[in-house]
Length: 310
Image (cartoon, rainbow, N blue to C red):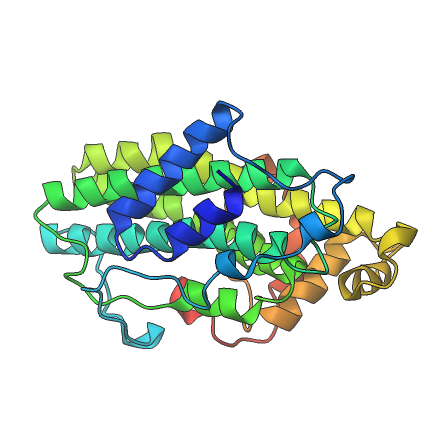
């Protein structure tokens, strides 16, 4: 089975449980060497052309019971001092992970077939994002199970599409997608998770706290690291003559001599409306290869649509 077929089948599935099942099955195929991946530099032009039957949808299918509202209309969730507050926090986390599954598969199918990137990306790119998708699928399943343990149900509360709005905005630029989704939103998740964990601990909900701290946090560090890794990869690749005419390479070369961090700053300022807000989880960000030089210059960026990531 080809990785693009899996990606689009997950994106087109409206069932969260089916997304999880198909994603974990793909990881098993990958581990057994049975998942077909692009990324061989010797492939012919015809083999690297996009297939119209496996192009990603503009918007992935989602559970039909979800009610969407603008981010600013999502009610406050409280401080986990009550069962109702903890359920609301878990519901939000479940939705974030559901979206993250789709985002991982979208980056595979969308940019693996994009004319500006498909002959640049190695097989390792696809392997890494299959693993990311599998991590997010397991997070979704574990958090959803915990939500149900506490009497909640995914779909009981309203949700927003803030993360997917960013995906739409970056649908034609892999470097921008990596910068905004994987090295801004994912990094913000690292910043807020410790506070969320402490809220659950203070409420006596050790099981949820342990899930967030022992399983989800370490794997989210690796997802942020993937964003940083592949931005660096594109920045280095931009120096090659083979890609000299690509828009992303021309853009990256503007920052030659200044460093990849400066390119990242430009990508975030152009594609993310809002400033980054401290406090930052410096230790987790550093584990992801994300030093202060990457993000501190963005703290003073103009304020905009970043309220929903708080």
